[in-house]
Figure 1 (cartoon, rainbow, N blue to C red):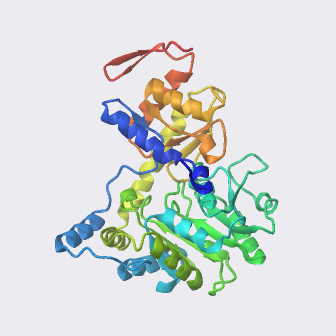
Figure 2 (figure 1 turned 90 degrees about the vertical axis):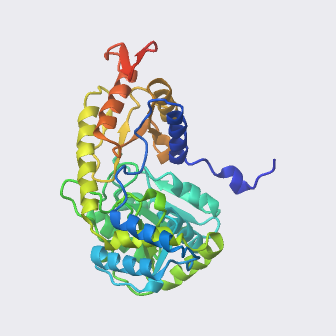
Figure 3 (figure 1 turned 120 degrees about the vertical axis):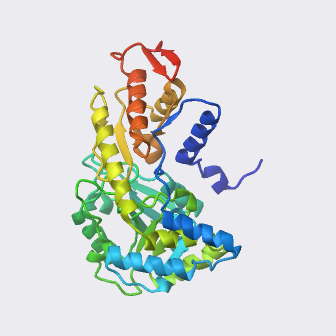
Length: 405
């Protein structure tokens, strides 16, 4: 079969493939513990569910404008004013089928083939594939000091005449690292000076721990006119536990949003009216559920970090936010893909290999699940890897005997 160059170059989404594999095993009755997922287990806000149900009951389920319904755009404008102290107009906003689509159509609107988009590593798995989809060049940047916290000089060294955009995801998936205010201020100033587009992937910005507060990128921008190349992307998936609703958005200058809207109109048209109405209700509704989720995730992080201390060779870096921990398991196996498959095969624990995020030897562990999932999942991993662990392990009523150490 003859496929296009793009068709042959795009790899499967490791995280979505993992979800599929775990679901298949569970359907077969396997006792899988999913420590790789990126979706909170709490319920969607009641306000969102009621709004969606009311619309469904009305039977008026119609096409929507390609950039989003007025009610949702109004909610996003209010959200932007509340959390970013920035008042924008409806023409500065586009609602998409998830923050992923917002980023994708943004890149399509600003990048030409062979131009470069830069992003710190470790990085979200979709950034390089998105660049490839439009014939652009993905350029990951690794910190010279070996940490998960990039410095401006790390970015500067990779900028060329072909650099058109920089993506910053903080707090970061997969590391949970929240970049410093100093770094955010420097990158905003640098991009303005160089005329480079800066895309702030803020999808986790309210899920931060240890008393930290979200950092407002607009605070450091000198150019807030319609010539600004600063784009802020967000959505309801993470903070409102509404992953299946697929609603995200981008805020940018009017010309960019117009171009993004035209692209999206031909790709998918507007997002589902049902999920847009639900998203607007979540944004406008009671916000206590976001804080409840944040506290739960912080507690889960603490439990995970404590359990990882029991490993002799694992280096785990305390996340500042999100619901991920990016831990170095290279002491046990340097090939993270083989290690992830080994853990799924032997003890039915699903994790994501670090190489998918640009760093070999690591595993991304999720704290989205219950405390029971976290503690039992880490216990299973330790049993599979640690020669000092007991030789037998019970998973439900099934007794496993370790014969590989």
